[in-house]
Length: 411
Image (cartoon, rainbow, N blue to C red; front, side, top):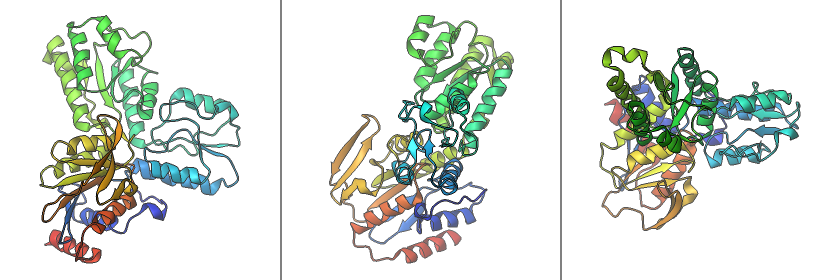
């Protein structure tokens, strides 16, 4: 896989060595067991896969390349490069300005742009309408287009489904930048609908088999379908794609549920005429990170710490998985760990930041789980590990622990 040139301060001396070790021993990614780092008085279980994915590293490399190649010019990001506040803060510290917020609200009017300005398209991609507006203003939207190739893969699959007369069901959050972009592309060639979760899929299924009315459909999916969506005609032949940062298992659950619904209505013998197999649109990095998180559920631990942006979809899903078993703290960075007795963290259910006091476990040898989202630099995870270690009297040095870890896996 391509090696990207990203700033040194994003890299880590600890996590990079752990990842390199596991990669050398398991190049085909068949082992999703976590890595144990035993410091004597406490231990960490580190997820097998986490942190920057291909699309994120590609976006960061291109963004800093744009800064280097265009000194003195105005440089804009269409919206957040990725959903990580520290990464975006660093980019803005170099003078980059955002044209929109994450909801698509305009911060700087497009009309203020000139052909000499540089506009970076984020990893999530952009809607066709936005790309056309920028091109009409003479802006080069391709030179620094960082759209993730796996997002583009979903677009290409949607286009193919449209040509085959399928309606596109997009598993995603309708306000998310990536889903807005995917919907823009899919709706060019096919009726399209955005489904958030299995509950909305069940409503859609009831409409397909006639258990619910068009009015029920309109009430739930208002603003989430293409114009003039016809429930009588447009739900006879469908395919499911996804926002790449959604839970892969949930996308598969939705696809299987819709497929079974089509079998109930049309029969198993004709399912290929009514449902398309689209498993090939699931992002490899999302799959790896989620499978690695599931691997963490097989161990015993006192608590879990997940590092990433609060508005990061893929990170939120990692929290959802870990909450099934562990007390889980979702933090943006090490600054949220105010002291050994206070941690600020995000509640994904109430959508609010909370403060927990005396959060450290009192067991004789505390065990921590650590992972992060696909938009979180490994260096931030390093800092969290260092901070936790500072709360305890650890007799072992990092290098000794890493050597023991290596010996454990090799032997």
